[in-house]
Length: 145
Image (cartoon, rainbow, N blue to C red; front, side):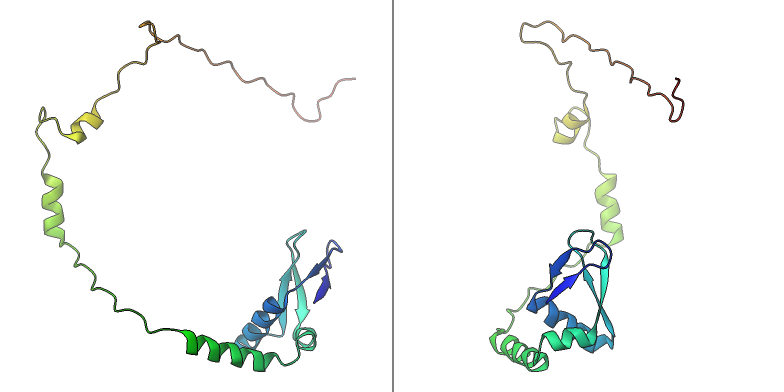
């Protein structure tokens, strides 16, 4: 179905699948209008239910066919494994209270240490770079003639 955006006057199409989905949603929620979004300005355009119904004759039968096809092709779901029980609050506190001793060489202790200074390939320390201050822009409306 071809529509023209009421805001930017761009022509755009609404596919049959989108029309069918809109009609189904409007039927379930007892709506009178559908919001078709313009691809150019992305604003919602109001489309009357009657206009959608005339563009898709026999839409109720198509919905019934799709529902039957979906019900017939769906396979029974595989049994899901039981979720693992969550640890109690007391056991989680015990885990957090235990800290590795310093000097044990654990991975957490290695991460906590500061990294060594970065040096150049010849063994000299890397040069420090100074940041330049940002250039100030003149205030708006203060042009001098």
